[in-house]
Image (cartoon, rainbow, N blue to C red):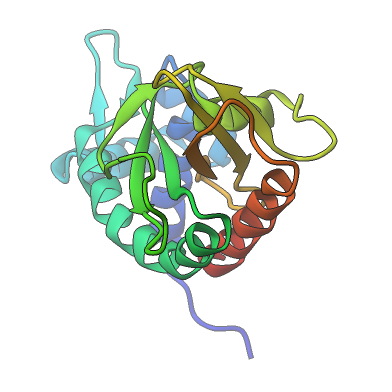
Length: 213
């Protein structure tokens, strides 16, 4: 038996998805055509979404995602962090390096979860909340590689000295999760990343992705 659903809610969510997929916003006519409904329905949907700050319209009448969506997104971070922690702990203890989960936040990479190993004499200090450009550091580069479809065959990205002098990093992107761009990685004080680390990071990224589905 098919569960009952709300047609209006479904359309509202489809509006948000359409707007999230464009950088320039969409007009009422464009939304009407893509949704296959008349303009009056679209006006009502946008008015409701605007009341909750989930949509805003510019002076030209183009609708865009509103700041309310960002506030909802911030509440997702604790849930993502909780799901990722078991895999990150295992990775940090296995490799003996600081493990992290990084998500895209606008044009930056944002570390939302960090686990440091318990048994090492020293390791890189890396804090949740740390931000950096997507094109610097293994975490951001892995995300960009996946976004652009140019990820190398091993499935991970290696860097050295890009975010901290003397530190090397390895990261693998989260794949198969709709609406979420991120990576799992490690950072260590070393001139080069040991050979076994890359595949281990890929495994951890897969574990995190499975936990988030």
